[in-house]
Length: 332
Image 1 (cartoon, rainbow, N blue to C red):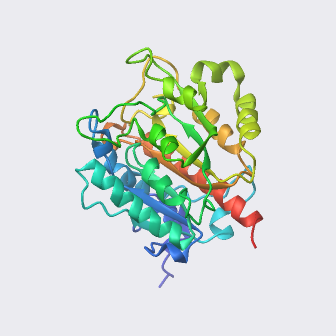
Image 2: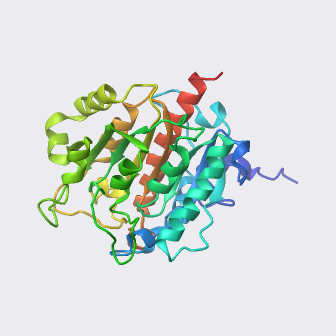
Image 3: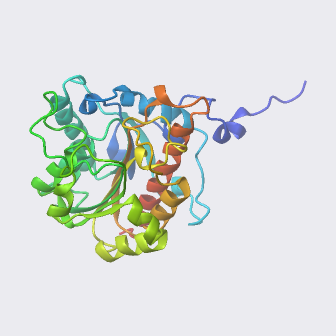
């Protein structure tokens, strides 16, 4: 009788085989057991003015990331062997339909990650989630940031610094987090770079806060004129390598051909290509990336190939590699 085939040999290449975790990492809810904590944030009540299915994003990306457990060809590293990387599960959201309470629940979940000293890389969820994450990992008492305001590289089609008292009752909504992080002293404004903004405005003054605060905004039209190398040079000139830096990546910064399944899709003006986005991230190698998130996947709008979830996995992988590479090269 012939020997049975060991199906585990093929596991890393099959997104549909086995119990889905992010990148096939072990599932362990205790963040103290890892260096990098992969987190799902199935949250969408912060974007209640438009589309609400972003809470399905973590499940969809877990599914597709199963087939994207890779080694990094450009860096020549295997992030999974450089660090302990676990999928710690989803943030508890007992108040999921009440955004302002859910924001507190997300902060509490990431506070536990900060207490453990792990660096979080998250998949959302709508784009209100960076604020509670930063409240946990970039406060004066945070372990991960060392208690100092952090730098940020923000990829998006929208600045998300809109100054509105509330939107349909939500104070901390998906379009205001970029303002509140500065008002609360969580970021160093001169070291915040926003990349890829495009499209027409709802009003002529709605983007004023970013520039008034001192953020560097690279609109997509300027990005096209500058080119990727100059954009990377701008990032590196404003953010020292050792400065704690957070990366937030809204999938609507990508052109809809690469990410059709997003909320608040921005048509008409071309977005970033996947290769442009990846080259920007590659250019950040060696920076002290303390965490990051990928937000606004909306699998109910995705095409049959699930290309948005696939590309979300790719971006998340790049952020993981930036964190793993830094940790490996700065071991005590």
